[in-house]
Image 1 (cartoon, rainbow, N blue to C red):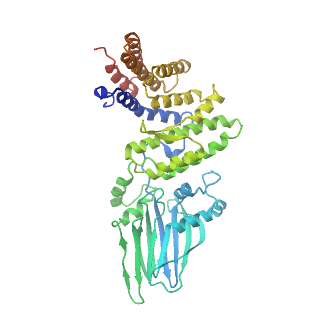
Image 2: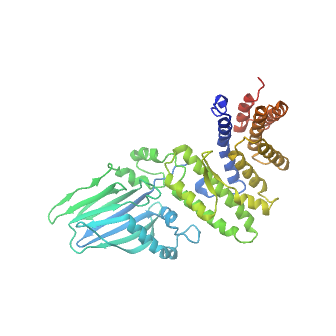
Image 3: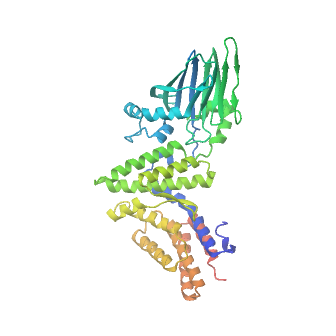
Length: 454
């Protein structure tokens, strides 16, 4: 592994940080272990990077005399994430919740639907809001919007840019009906539809500022079923093959967190369980955010920024550590759980997570801090000898011992350096012996090579 063989790096600090970052890759499997045992996190954030369909909206405009009428359909889960329609957090958007959210929906549609007739902007009127399901039972927010003009429409310009807060290149598949002619058009932030309407003939000037979209792809893009036209599946697959972080998944996790925060605020028997689950949800979200950035860079910047702002609003501490270049949860709910239930059913898992956070965010330069960290890990192993993630924790302990060995060598304290080298080697051998054919065993073998006396 490149991270293990960085002994030739220019600085000791870089070596320590990079090797700790390498162990971070093993953390993903442990996060999963904690998330599924003994409970399950929000289903959309399973770590398997299963594909999900691209988010696509639909709109139909019709021009009749002095009016323009539009029926718009937006993916309900995306709108819910942005506007928080599901106020009772039961996973459903009721009619009453739609009614309460109508002012916010009206403002959102007005912001993202802009109609110009005869060179002048036209004010909109939201006539109806409801939910609608397609043939796959996928839910949409449906709105009827009308525009009234002072005279007959002779020149029409339409621009829509829905859901760009979540997807910068979001597509809206449109149909425009005017003068007895129906025309398909794909709206996005760079595309504006323009048309001149004449009494006897129609001239179309559909202007795409940044290229022409593939209509066939958009027809199938929002379908969640596996069935699709064979020729377009190959195109769609490339766009959605390795989706990790998505708006529906983020929405589900944020709503779960908000619900757990409410439960934890009550002094009831369920409070401790809610605290632990809140910590696990936050930890899982941070892990998904890291995996997203590692896999796709800042491709989903809007979702990442939204996750940070909304967790901050909830009082859940997920933040980016610039030194480590990772997102971390601050572990507050785990610490609170341990304070209230030090011998609770989730005590070992909660303490393990806190130990892992300290490990990954430590600088590994201070002997006293390293000694204290190693002591905390050995005490945990003594209390919970059968804990399912002990192989990972022992690997952390190896790195602590290895770093102590290096720090004492730098201080020319060869006796202590030799002691910690032996402790590190002993732990490596224990991992290889007790946990064969695991990632942790492979890591221990790599570390053993760096601990050989030359």
